[in-house]
Image (cartoon, rainbow, N blue to C red; front, side, top):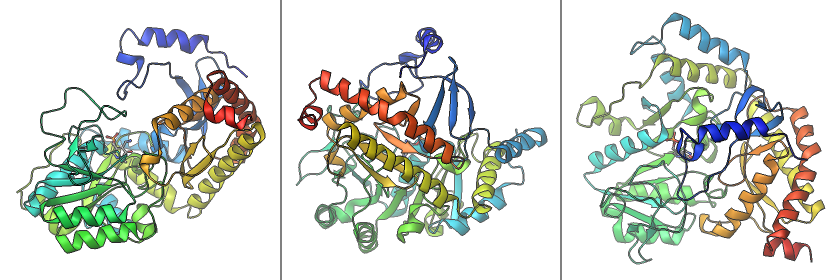
Length: 451
Ligand code: PMP
């Protein structure tokens, strides 16, 4: 099945005159190809300029939690627009913060921002001031925004885990500030307790903070190994290091209290963003321990931002919380539908003769065209990323929009049985075509599967 795309292709041509890559964002040499502009949406469906219907499993990179055209959410935003928007405080702050503190285990104090990238930098500044140390430990494959100090790199060696530029994945960039990546960042593999213990033994007294995603959703969808988060927590306590959990994806998407409420491990500082405000307007937050964020209250550490805590954003957080609170079964329902989609995907792959695994959390998953689930971000090789990306791209031509990078599935509150049926109707043909494309490129996995 090939959708009509004349209008969106013409639009892309026009966009190329104004937007570099014809897009709002890109990674290093990630390629230039048209995206589908969507002009209407309802629930989990989108309609493009040519009138084709699509199933939205992108969910605005995980941010869109409430669904398209969610009436209750939209009414709340409209009513706030009609009351007051361009003021610093509008009377919504205390209520929203009270609920955040109630739900997110690590939250004692709250500061808002707009993007994950920005509040992550603020969390690092706070950690350095609190500990009087400079170094930050990060983990291979984990993504914490595109700022110079936190994006990509590779360790010099196992004995010397200082980060250095690495021109081998999408997280390389020219133009980084000298020293930003390599002077203060240590990088080790994630989910490897020995590597974690080693780095704390050798460098624990130099570390201001460690920062990780609780589930490696940006690098393959691996869950933390049993006991791994607990070990990180214990080592941070022993060495006086600030433990930062980046819950930009998992916050509100995995549970109202984030992954930390599910795994039972409480960090010192937490980064929230994306789904917290439902998906229509940007809001991020840095929440955490009172004695650390006290450096803000004593005005020793600066935190600024014109739009921090803006009324429309907080109204969106409030509306999202209302929807989640009033529908306590929503995580089970959403996750159930997405799991059904994942099962249908693996069944269809088996039918057409392609190996395929799906892993992650029920409300956010990563699919891979290979036989075994990935255990660590390093298992997500460039070859597998390319193969996953190709299959994802073919599915787009069948009206199924998986999320980048490279083949991800997210759900929103309005995903329903009809959407699962829509997926079932189309995925078989999509994967069949994807297999033909892979075979025509002599892809070894497709060739092997074809016998
Ligand atoms: N952390 C994680 C885990 C993310 O997935 C992202 C965005 N994909 C960010 C941080 C950066 O957030 P933002 O794009 O809002 O700056």
